[in-house]
Amino acid sequence: MIKARHEGEIRTITGNAAAAYGAMLCRPDVVALYPITPQTEVVEQLSQFSSSGLLDAEMVEVEGENSAMNIVSAATMAGGRVFTATSSWGLAFMYDALLQASGLRAPVVMVNVNREMPGILAVSSGQQDMIATRDSGWIQIIAEDCQEILDLLIMAYRLAEDFEIQLPVMVNYDGFYLSYLSEGVNIPAREDVDAFLAPLKDQPERPKLVPGGPLACATHGIGEGFVELRYKHSAAMERAKRKFDQIDQLFGDFFGRSYGGQIEAYRMEDAEIALVTSGSASGTAKTVIDSKRGEGIKVGLVKLRMFRPFPRETLTEVLGGRKAIGVIDRSVCFGWNCGPIYMELRSLSPEIGLVPMLSFIDGLAGLDITRAHVESMIEKVHAASQGNPYQRVTWVNLEG
Amino acid sequence: MVEFKIFTKNEGAWSNADELLLCLNTGSWRSERPVMDRKKCNYCGLCALFCPTQCMTNMEDHFLPNLDYCKGCGTCAKECPKKVIRMVSEGEFHDQGKA
Image (cartoon, rainbow over all chains, first blue to last red; front, side):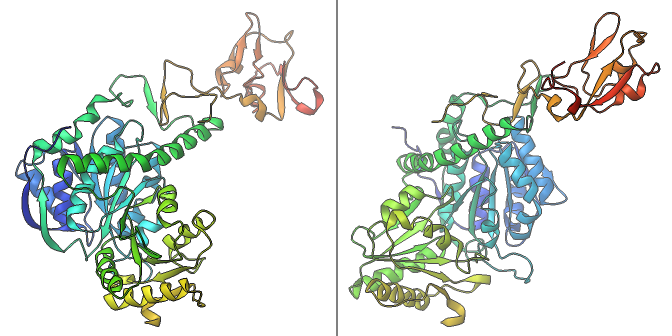
């Protein structure tokens, strides 16, 4: 088994800087970025890496996010490794290009710093942007802390460019909470990242456009040819789940940090009730779970690390047989009046059992998901597990 | 794993100009077909030149449309200087679109 040869260098950096370091270490050929709060620092950092010679990439200064996505997905068609980053309105502005990238099976790696969506001006945290693109055919993964951001970037390239996957990957992390949070991050040595990504070169080559080559892309879109490509896309999404687990394990063996793959299960072994979270609030939830355990409530946590593809099998396995489940969503599923992750989890009810499931909409527009909030959620889920009547959806900030 | 009638071995929508990937029988779109009076045809070739699907077949002394691909647009009939080509409703034929 190969292992990293260096220990890495620990530096106190922000989540945005961690994303920029992660991207830089993977040696992208083409980087196209447009700044938007709270992602701007990623652009600044990468520009700095480029000017100081640490990053040898074609840096494209674009007039907007739509161009950024079109440029990077086109660059993958020529065989390039690419990177871009955006947030919220920027993600919305590249929506058509987002679909184009996944339809092309372009292995784009993009950071999306989660921020609330337009309509109500909110320069604040929330996952509504990611949720709004859930059916865009992208792989969507979510980080909890700054170290995980950097590590997920490296794993994202292994996933996106895997010959069996060939899909764009969106690495999400909470804007403001993580984008500007400084903490100690282990930055791996360049040669170790090179070694970790090296197996990507030993696989069959993807088709690519070369001058004079008789090849076209984005073709045969009529009838059964279209259906075949959609089926292949969907099949690749299914394969991405196990592949992500495997990459997480390989990463753990190599760098000594492993996160559990599609989900992280925390104190779930003997848990009677479970809380499902994603992103930066998971840390708070773990702390509260520890204290509730002290009070004798057997509660565990499932942190969703992969939202697309949805980890159906793994969630069924870990949540099956629990007495009640609470889901915290930092976004809203309009039309269902609940949280989107809750709504998707409800589709698994036949598999995990028809137990009480409670939706908690909390932390919209950067409001804190506090310890008190999580305590009250656990108490509600616990009461429901005892057979008491329960409220299906709670807008936590309105109801306390 | 489902077995396909495979259009492409690739994961993405790639096509190589040296390989036939997709053949679409546009003849099924037709509601009218061109009918030639070959005795009047002077073999000038304007119908073949203007045909958008390039489905006019050179028969050495006249032209005939390949009905697998003829969409029935009527361009040939419009362009023919000798008025040799008539557009006839598909309802008049019982050959399922074959010439």
